Length: 362
Image 1 (spheres, one colour):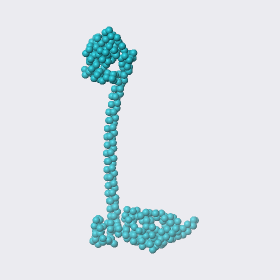
Image 2 (spheres, one colour):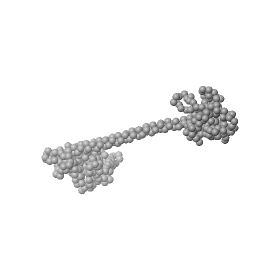
Image 3 (cartoon, helix red, strand yellow):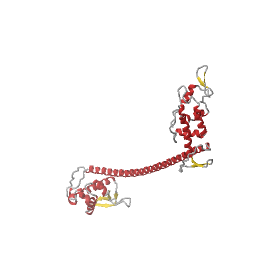
């Protein structure tokens, strides 16, 4: 964008004053042609020093303000305030008669344009620049609104994050509480199981005199001795283990251990609770009377402890279904297949059923 000025004005009053005078003259002339901004017998134009500083970047607001005051003091321009709002301090300017005559060349000085040959074109460019500045200011206001909105969104997101963290902490507390409840239920269940051992066996044939004082105790009113529930359980397991391992001479594999919290221990405990210690020992005795359980079947299968303590297998052994006196063989007329008397099961099916469950883990 090019600015022009009158050489005579510039020489007498200063270059910036000459440029501003040309600028004011252009807009006053334009408003006069459009019939607008007419007050007190003059056509006016207005602008702020801030906007003028944008249009004339080579001069600061303070310098522009001083130049306008200089023109006013010299009687070249007039100033006024015709703003609609009382608080609006934007200044209005028009050319005084002296200024108009000076630009018209009637003062005898020759007017010369510098740099730009088409003032109208330059002023249009200035007007377009002013519109661009206004548009930029609107964009800045819009951007500020967007930034405020984004900050609100960020605050809302932070609140949501805090709420989610509270929910996570609450869920963790609930999980811990549930685990405590599970542990408590396990303890109650284990206590009931141990009580079941004591109720099924009113008297204790064998009493371990070594008592652990840290374990809860019961009173044996018959022998007037104090024994622990844990001692009773371990005594039952020890008796069953010894009775089972005595079958080794019949080809039955002994057991090395029956430890708590194993499937083998839980299965044995269930059989003792359901049938009592005496019936468990009786079932083990029945194994001696069964050649089939001792490996004389067609496949040479031998009973194992884990197979023995399974519920369906245990009752058959206890009732003597596999005893030699209860088992016999005969040929069916149509198939020639061997069957077992009393039970009516084929020998092959009996072997297959005996093989099921042999893989129980202890």
